[in-house]
Length: 294
Image (tube, rainbow, N blue to C red; front, side, top):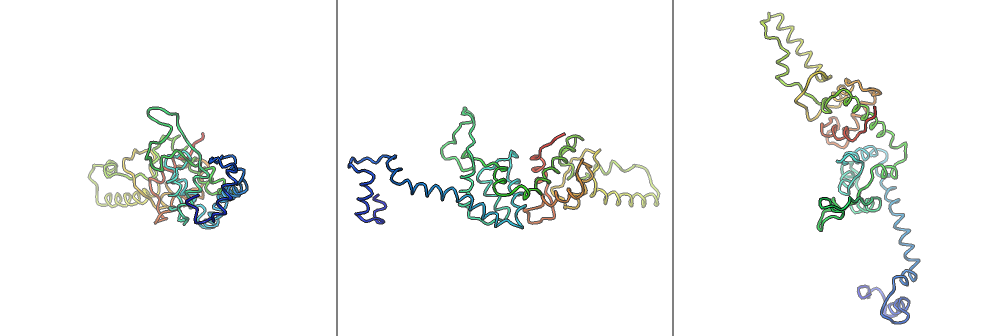
């Protein structure tokens, strides 16, 4: 009351204290305080409960129509564990990557309201409570990505991402079934491997010219398809969307059409400075997140 003395007159302070301690015992009971200010408490609860919905509406306004899929892709990209749960720093980072300009305090408040506590059994190695001074990344609260998307978007508004996830699952299943490395789409032919394909015989001038033409043609086709029978040891760190699409199509995964591959490539290239390229790290991250079903 002393800290708020400048806001109330002496008469108002005496009235408040008389309501809280009518018998001048010097003790204010919590139950009595709740009864006296019941209406004010209920008003605060109503406004607090409605604020998350207001924030969600503001986010929808900000992301529609152009940034909706970008935000969905950013949320999936920051899920580094691939388990469908985000921590607070990852949640804030997703909005920054998607170019959705929101006050950080507002985003953190939304996370705190919608997140749930995640605690492990207390052991010598994994204490149930974070140590004193632990940063916010280890505060024990996580947000379910599926739950948040269901509150922010309607079912038909996540259709594109759902189709991309299904395409990823089909491609992953094909790679696993064929026993191929997930990086095979970004494979590069090494010089040693190229030399092994050359015959060590003396060629005539016409044969050398024919060999050069064949080599040039093979070089052109190498960008389009990957020889799945060859063990590659070198992998490019990025590919153009067209080259990526051709290589994924060469895997001949079931139920994966060229149109679906094009949508997959567009999805993976979002939220980058150059949205015409796809990075190997991004491909591996989203592929590992995807489930498989045979």
